[in-house]
Amino acid sequence: MGETAKIILDGKEYEVPVFTGSANEKAIDITKLRDLTGYVTLDSGYKNTGATKSAITFLDGEEGKLWYRGYPIEQIAEYGTFLEVSYLLVYGDLPTEKELRYFTDSISHHTLVHEDMKRFYEAYPTHAHPMGVLSSMIASMSTFYPESQNPNNFRDIDLTIHRLMAKMPTLAAQAFKVSIGHPIVYPRNAYSYTQNFLHMMFALPTYEYEIDPVIEDALNKLLILHADHEQNCSTSTVRMVGSSQSNLYSSISAGIAALWGPLHGGANQAVIEMLEKIKNDGGDVSKWVAKAKDKNDPFRLMGFGHRVYKNFDPRARIIKKACDDVLNKLGIHDPILDIAKQLEEVALKDEYFVERKLYPNVDFYSGIIYRAIGIPTEMFTVMFALGRLPGWIAQWKEMIEQGEPIGRPRQIYTGHDLRDYVPIAKRG
Image (cartoon, rainbow, N blue to C red; front, top):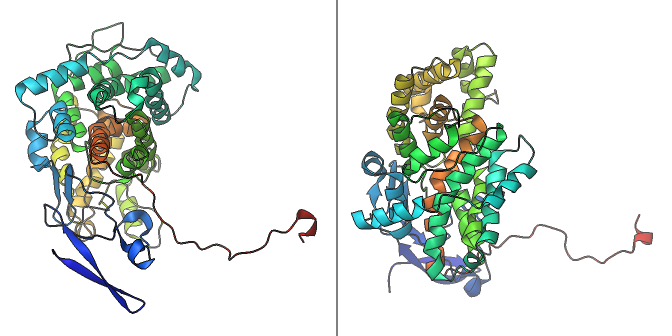
């Protein structure tokens, strides 16, 4: 018998197994705890609960490590393309040239969306938030591909995966174009994944849009850095919805809805809103830094520190250079971005921030890059969703292939004790 842990309840001793992960993580396996003891565990927010065994992403917040399928994020972001990394996450290994060519060609040939979906855009309010639009558009795709509604039809899973990877950038860009009253730009199969998205976002019929390689490289890195991040809120949502045997489209739609929240994917949008607040107040960075240090002041700097990474966010180190490259190449003079650079300098040098590990995180730099290249604030979380898509797909696919049971958390009831129903005429 392997390693075990002992639990003593009501004077009785129980032995439960200890599971060791491939990175030497330890977990007490309480799968049979309720059957053995009648007890359940209480862990609000699941911060100490391992809901699954996964071979996709390893994250060590104390050491600042992030691995995709065993490859460190530093190498992946430096040498990989987004589609190459997507293949790695979904299928488990880096692709050969032949495999990557097939994967890329298949995605390129599925970028068009059904023309009937244009009518959906017409029904949304003009200024509808693109995350709400994207979530509902992805959910509706299952109605166009009814064969995808059976998650156990493994023959069609690859096709569904390729369709999702191909069509989500198209739907996201179309949502943006409709929101600003511009004509929809159709995809071009000759472009790379990131080139195609930039083209659909910013091209107009009146002129030829030129794709800046510095911007393309920064976008490629951003998508890679966001591609997966272990069992976070949106990923857990995708797995929970999928555990009911819901199809991949509806599971991803639910993940988009979870990502929309300001405590999750909305953080990079909150960074720009904070910077705009500082600008509108006169742009005095020192004043707002002092407010952030004042424990009696409710103001908090957005985009600094991380709830998982305790020392540094490895993704932030990578994207900082891309951010500097974009700003230097474009030569933008934007007071919002000037304030951001001042805040960055303070956070990297000021003893208060250094001691508390309040370093600029990936949300801080991604928001700056998106603003610099012309992506509006309300589209920031959509960009996050585009990057996270292959991770969500990989997690859903792993969950289906492992035959995981339907998710069904327990609770501790804190309501009234048993009481009798009182007819309405007798209620005081």
